[in-house]
Length: 166
Length: 166
Image (cartoon, rainbow over all chains, first blue to last red):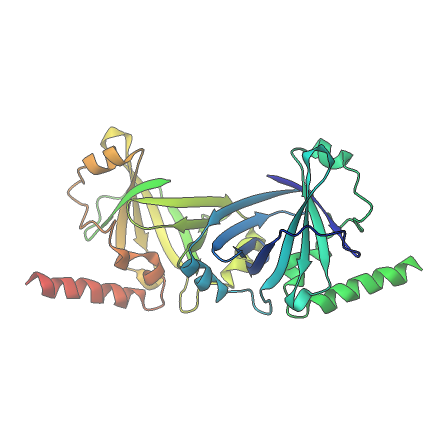
C-alpha cells in the first residue's frame, strides 16, 4: 500500500541541480498498468489499483527489450509522458517529489509526498509553493493526461473551476 | 518465485467430477501480462517474468469492470483461452493441475505441478499418464498458443519432432 498526497504546482520553487529524466506510458488505465524509464538504463513495470490516498501498487524492474515491447502497446490515444523528477527535502524527513513536464504536457507541474502512515498524511502542512491538492481528484489522473491532447483536457478542467469560483 | 514443471498430456487420466472453468488472455507476451477469469465471479491480473523452472510471478484480484477493460486490450492476433482445470492429488502432498482446453485449443491438454523448492522439483517422478516435459521448452508457451491459430502452431511443433525422431 502506498500513502501519498498530490498537489498542483503553478510557480516552481528554486530547483536543485540534480534530477532524473523520466519517461512513462500506460498500457491500461483501469487498472493502471504503467511502464517507466528512469535515466538511460532503468526500466520498470508498475500496476496500480484504486484511487485517492491509499493505493495498491506493485512494481518490477524489466529489461530494455521488455520495455520496448510494452511501448508498442500503449493505451490507444495516449503517448509517453516525459518529465524531470526533482527530490526536495521537507521537514520530518519527508521528501517532495516534484514532476516538471516536457513534451506534450510542458507547463504542467505537480508535486507528491509519500507518507509512512495515514496519520502523518493527514497531519501534513503543505509548503507555500504547493498549489491546490488533487489527491482525491480523479480528473488529474495520468490516464487522462497521457492522452495526446492532455494539456488541453487539463486547461478545460482548470478553466471550468475558474468559472465555478466566480 | 514459483517453481513448476509442465508436461503434455496425450491420454487423459480418469477425471474427478470437480473442476473450475478458466478463461484467460494475454495483454503482453514478454513480459507476460495475463488476465484470467475463474468460474463466474473471480478475476485476476498476473504478471510473469522469466521462463523455465523458476519464474517471478505477481497476481492481484481485479473487478469485473477491470477485467472487461483489459479484455479489450488482448495482444494483437491472440484470443481468450478457455479450459477446465482439474486438481488431482499426487504423493507427497503435491497436486497435479490438469488443464483441458475448449475453444480454439480443444484437443490440447497439459498438466503442471508446483513444488515448494528446486530440490523436490528435481526429485519428482512423473506418473505414467504425464507425457513429455515442456517446462524448459519456450515453444509451448501460452503466448504462442493464445494465437488464433495456436492449435496449428502446436501441431507443427509436434510434427517436426516426429520427423526428427525418425
